[in-house]
Length: 229
Image (cartoon, rainbow, N blue to C red; front, side, top):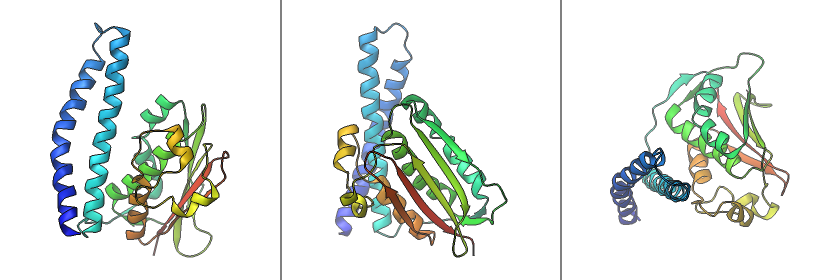
């Protein structure tokens, strides 16, 4: 198992440098006004594929570190509303491109601070919110909430979408490594099935739990908790 993880780590590192260069070159080309409309579409498609490959190599690297116990955490006390606001700013461009509205329904009262690794937890939240955008409907919306959990010393964060939903038979599998539901594959052919697996590991490392409520064709609500004690 260790040799497999080492191979994945080395391969991901080796992939990242050339793919980053390709993405940078395509981004430069995309802004070139002299290109024909047909050429711009080719560049745009190649750029999207390059970004997907870069995301895959990053996710594989993260998983190798998680499974080897090398995904180190650096915890600090933070305000959950500030954390969510900061994280969502990185997802807005994707939502705007997809025509999906994102709202943060801020807590009405001050909440206890949480002790988190902001960088790692931001990866988890981004993975959940980006899925909510990608598997949404035209003119759909995503609403993020943070509030005190109904029981115990926890903050509960939820991400509600108006998307394609998850079949009942897939609910228990959705956080598994490489799993992608049939309807998700039809909507987005690209995807690794790693984002929610990574999110689950990160939330558990924070002492919380993660789950989903969904109905096929009616959207989903992803929840995760963070201890305040």
